[in-house]
Image 1: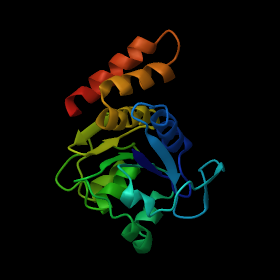
Image 2 (image 1 turned 90 degrees about the vertical axis):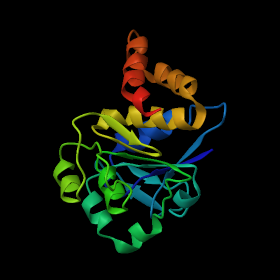
Image 3 (image 1 turned 30 degrees about the vertical axis):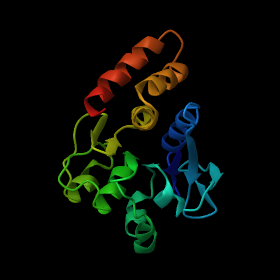
Image 4 (image 1 turned 60 degrees about the vertical axis):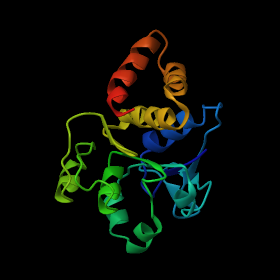
Length: 198
């Protein structure tokens, strides 16, 4: 199963890298997460340059799409050509957004009538888009999920894994990446956050 991790200029490294690293740890069934950018390369908010692993059009074909956040999200949603390329389909795709990625989903009409999670900086922009923002790290409605706070990215990745490969696969990945001595605690926290949406 193929997953597009949408990564734009000014991206937050925690969102794109945590998601792709966790997703690519699933081997049975094999998940393949690719960093997908609108240009050949993009620089993070801290100057880390990455090269796209697939063109933006890949997002339309992927089984799942995660929209990362970054410092230029408001510019991205004003780019009609770029937004027009993001013809995502929640009927056949698992779609998630991290922090300001929720603004992208809102502008695409994928959060119509449902509340979302986002970070504190993005909250007023998402509210201006007509979306209620929850004070929690994660929420999902059917095939569409949002997470708020940089370290909430592991919830979004775990939810995506659980939806594509089952909770046992998600649990194994969370357990693997969790700090030594806190592995069971992290797994239980993820289970508690995600169980209502699985």
